[in-house]
Length: 251
Image 1 (tube, helix red, strand yellow):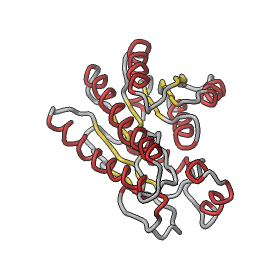
Image 2 (cartoon, helix red, strand yellow; image 1 turned 60 degrees about the horizontal axis):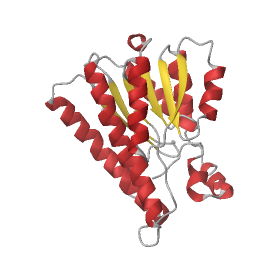
Image 3 (cartoon, one colour; image 1 turned 180 degrees about the vertical axis):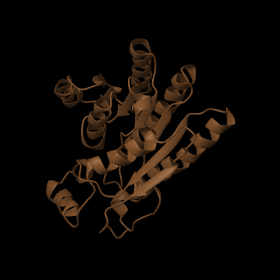
């Protein structure tokens, strides 16, 4: 991780869960971290908590369903920090919206955040990385749902968006190779993680608690450990995808 000390990392969805835990860890490793979310109060509180660490955390308000917000954010990052070196596309969401009965607006929001927002951020990050030293790293937070389809209709459209992330990971790798870039791309695909994700999906805390108490779930820091491993590998090492699930998770 020494090569990243003093360099710039952007994390989407940094207010809670995996994004917040990763922001903390990268700041401790001495990176200049920009955390974005629609609600930045929690990021700012974390920034205040980490003000004596080696690195720094800056909060930026950004709605990933609005391209103008994303472009404004990247312009600000370039103006104030010189551009991105590591971009972690962590933001993602699911609605309880089956394909036969879900609401179109819920599908659209999943596509906007999980696919289009991720793609726009990746495009803009690569532009800045190539202008710098062309050795940056894209991290796409995918899901086990991007690799298999569960017989559970509430998550089917979400699963479809994550299958797109699986494809985008390989597409990005190929396009970076085409332009002879040294920028690497990695997908991280967790199973069930103890975060706010389930409660936000079902709008039901008891149901979320039941899902997360059925077995020992992953914790946010377990996913962060995988990300730290990936970006810490030598530049000639391409870790394409890491699938990690709780030991007791059967699917």
